[in-house]
Length: 145
Image 1 (cartoon, helix red, strand yellow):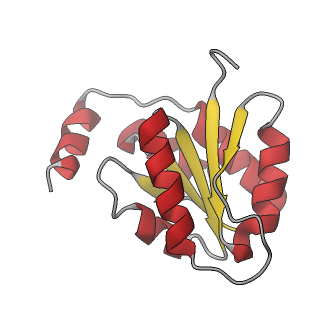
Image 2 (cartoon, rainbow, N blue to C red):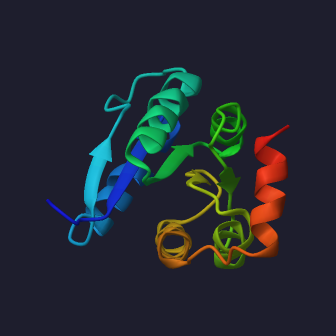
Image 3 (cartoon, rainbow, N blue to C red):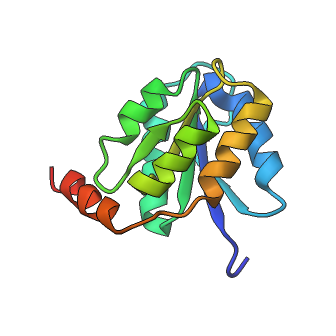
């Protein structure tokens, strides 16, 4: 799939259903890479956040992490240098996360956003470009923390 945009997906058990829906939704227009979980049994979200972060950095792609609330995934993902994970509950947050923060990972909570809203948030996140300029200076300051 040369020149195809990639999306890296990961979830824990609490985000698995939404992850499957979103992967199916975006599959026609993106190459989908699923780094787990693929099981409904209880699992530890930091493992899957790590899998996704490594792949996002390796492929310079965007990622979507999903757990019950999105909070745990967001906390775990932001431990990785070069990852800017944003927990977004609406399209405006997704837009600003990309425009101002150049976020490369979207975090969603299956238990707190409906399917249609999650699709819209993810679509906004994936299609909004980074504005650069003054925001780049701030991102560099964050990266040097």
